Image (cartoon, rainbow, N blue to C red; front, side, top):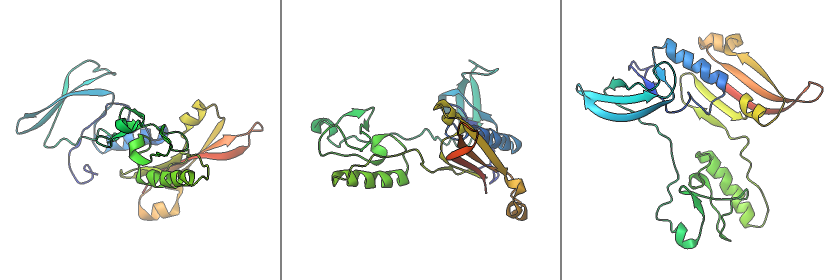
Length: 231
């Protein structure tokens, strides 16, 4: 978004590029950034952010690639830090109540119950998907269990999106995750360049990818995941 508004942007990422996004779409989007003149460095450790030359200088060290182990710098007027979220449970009295936590996150079972009878937990404090619609869904599951209607939380189809240009959205398993789970899959794709509406809008960059389970006869079964990049 900043690049589209005319700012010169450089991205430094501690892990891989968009690790939660389907690999093919992440790779495709990275190539779009490259074409837009946005350099991306992945698998780097940021060591310091300091004032320099009237702006800010970020010193970082790549853990892989041809510059592995070198101390490199990136200069800019502003540094935007997006280092993720973590549960905020300080001051809730969890320790006094005997509620078990793991690195600040409340530990729950599939019914969203804690280890203390009569205490349930939902949302960001449990350290899972930190999204509002997930917390809302978990609230329904927890209340059902509180009322005696046994129900397990199912997080296999959580909608997720990345606010890029073009946008990226997904639900369900990626191809890699499905294969890691031992499932036989077939991936189909539909490019936006074949869509009449996309052509009329002049927004042909992007595609839809669908991951489906394949049975023993080679026929398609359940839809395991759908991943979209486009306007």
